[in-house]
Image 1: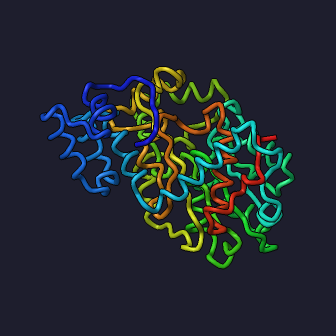
Image 2: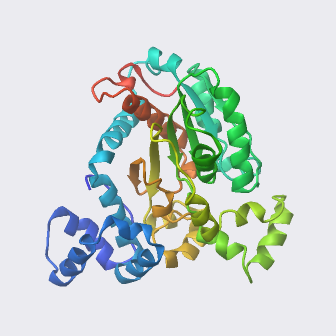
Length: 364
């Protein structure tokens, strides 16, 4: 895959797949035959949660996660945005870069609107409030706004808030990029794909969907059903989150039915960001997600909160980072968000050679 990954995986087959098979070394005929069969699977398999579950049991969750990342990274439509993201990230991390920000013409031309994730007020340490990236854009003097949502509101209710908040912001016609995280993903999708018209959305140039729980999460099914709901309800009350309605809106069937009626205008560039961890990453780094990751393992590759294939808007292009978890909880997600935004600006302006970060340096 062209990426170094130092961690443990959940099976000898996954280890062989990563270390040997993908490097072209075929030294275990039985495993080679198994993996050849896996590689013959259509991409459509990842839209079938039942089949993903079956394949995860046959090959192991980590093997399937690695294979899914590979398929995404191989897609021609993903290669340019992936390269731009990695270029911008390297430049932002480089101490040798000149002390400048984004290209001035791009700074002034675009507006950035942030849509937070679930419980962003109750749990600000998760990064769901985008406080880090917003502060960076403030220091860069880039026009940016934050949409205040119900902390534990339903997806449908928050989508209405997003739509109503966008209308006055879009009236001046200024080109706009929307960035959403986690549960803010499906909320934004409803606003763009159902509640607002294509005419109203004309200023929206791009939507960056970061780890969006677009198809909900089996965790919502588990925690709002008997017998787990007997524990979830008092726990939510004790922590001050309120009722379970917000969580219920993330149930998988409700999410699938909701998504059938959505149609986001083709003119909006959709860019998905996807972290693809393996089990060792969760064990070593994502201490808080060990329990939820273990609950989701029976369903297939996941980042501790959401099934990985369910985070992708299929009409978009995708940036994939192997070995990373649910993006908002990563310690450097603010820098990565700016790199992602820079990559999208370059994509919108149609040039790999013109670099935002040719005048960009370390994050101020």
